[in-house]
Length: 121
Image 1 (cartoon, rainbow, N blue to C red):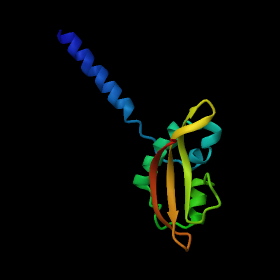
Image 2 (cartoon, rainbow, N blue to C red):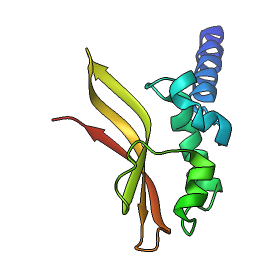
Image 3 (cartoon, one colour):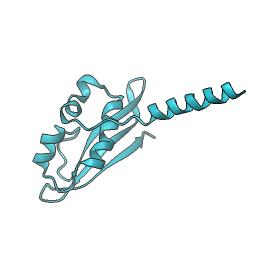
């Protein structure tokens, strides 16, 4: 019985260790997202957490954001933009996902950045 308990504790530790998958933000890897990580976005999603915790996005200009993150998924809106972090598909259409949403003021300065999860209804 004692061996079983140790095994369960060890298994739980390993699961916890790998579920806390932290990835440091890397501008080059972030910008290669669609080429290397694909739309499931596991690496980019993990990098977004580090980006928000350890980089000061609020106050950056649109130009500085583009240098750091590359082109966003939408390039026509001047007040809000987003970067796709992950998407789940039902055959060919996305049904849920997570995006990094960035909002700007009238001078193209970032005023907020947050991760939003979405679900198609």
